Length: 603
Image 1: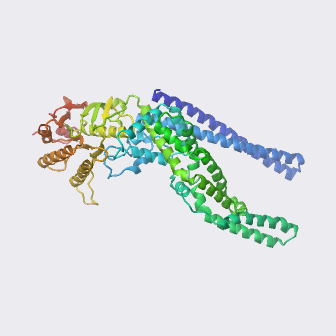
Image 2 (image 1 turned 135 degrees about the vertical axis):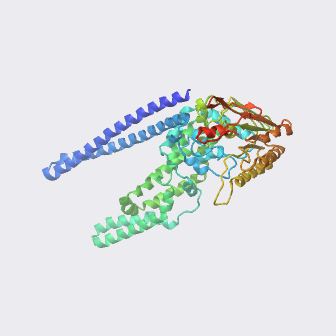
């Protein structure tokens, strides 16, 4: 399947469906107004024209027709919401292919942390990020799970966990209809991704209600109705009857206020749990081939009833509970019937039966959603390679490029780090591609560890922990200079290399120690690289200082010098972004200064 053509066809189809349903809803709304006007006219005829018995029968028929039209209109509206959610699924697919960042969610910025070993340097979160071209989640937990997969520091048992995710992503990549259905079911929530923690906390809670509440739920309504029926028969004073009724209403309102926190925790307005039922039902129905996906689906089937059936039961209870949103119902009908108490006990019975499984259901949904996002990325980039997972540390790629760069601007390069204790020293002129190469190595490692394909013709990667020092921020508030801030980042990379938990460090150091003079920069940078390699780390260092390239001779094959360079024709300077062996022989700083209008002469 061609991703762009599939999305474009789906967008056109869903847009037509939305237009048809909107027109249909408009016609039904007009019919409702006409029926309401007819009812008013009939009432006027009865009052002023003294129409006979037929007018009352006509009013009954009109009211019945109005109710039918309300139900039909609600169903059309629901269908339109689903079609609009499906339309958004296709539109976002096209936006990801076009790298149209302004039309993709940016809620992932909340996952950004300056203390993380690599996410900020590698543009994992935020605008124009890795997660933006992968994220198709519709729930908060799904987004959080995807963010976790893209920021894992230690990868558990290598390579089993990554292979299991890779198999699952391959499976889901071929299930386009399922991924569309899953996104559509969750998309009716809109862009908002409600926090599920209140419903989880309630489901796992133990607090119940006293027997007094159970007693009041049946006795007080019986007393109220008894007063109305028996009191009328015994010709009791209206004032006495009204006082008893209002007392019962006051008690009911007070009890309802005490139950509000519990009822609100599962309210349709406070939680989206019941609206995730369709997503879970879609997972339950899908015949996955991947063991990981099948195992995840089995979580939803554990217990006497399927998760979707239990959630449907909860949805019905919540539907009754949400009747209290009406002010008339809340202060008159509800208290008279002790409605809130009956709903609360129904919720407690549901919690006792299924509450302990809610967290597992939502975790299973989040897992499938996150993997489905990675699968969409695989579907949209069929030319990307599935990485081969080596048992020993290594990073060897053919035609490696950065996945955030558009297809028509992307240039691939071969990168070879065949074992632990190996490094590339990358030199080159300004804007030639040094930083992009380092970020391409890191971004593709992140994708590989998550279980996704990578932007390369081939990649062999072994166990490693990505650690970077690229974007350095000084801080007036903390009194940190740029150079000292970089030293702290380098110290963190070295500490991670010393841990060796989850594999050696895959280090990426951009313009290392450029905040100090050339002599000290060479001495310090060489010391850092030696320390990292001695500890079994592998990676790449970019620099403008050619003194660091002496490491290739000093360390006897453990370091390889590579470079980028510009091409100059007359006054025009261009870049081919092709990685070449050896040390760069040119620079372009003065030429760039003159290009932006800064007058400077060659010495």
